[in-house]
Length: 120
Image (tube, rainbow, N blue to C red; front, side):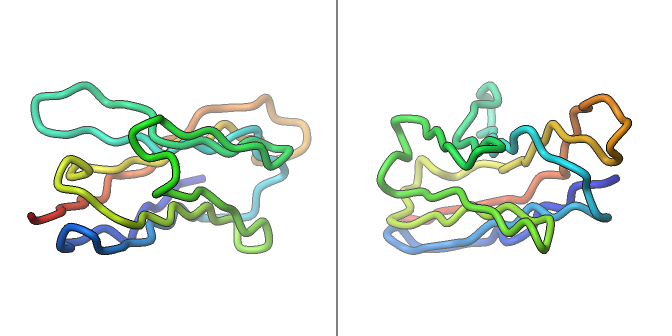
């Protein structure tokens, strides 16, 4: 299975973007999906997480501005980003721990990055 991240782009400060992370095939179960970001010269950091029971986690830098959600029917997780700031500029990656088939062990998958650029 592959994870396909999309939705990045160039936006002015205060604007919004919605990132999508879609699995390339149907999935038996997903333990958790994370969105990470990596800015130039910085380490990759966890931005948001949604776990199997629907619970969510947000880094303090994005809490109240970003919302992670999922559409199980579409095997897709979204990251709605509002009130974007220049410091949100980074490559955003999705990561999932999932079981493709019922008898599989949970495995970790990364999507390709999608660039988000916020201009001041």
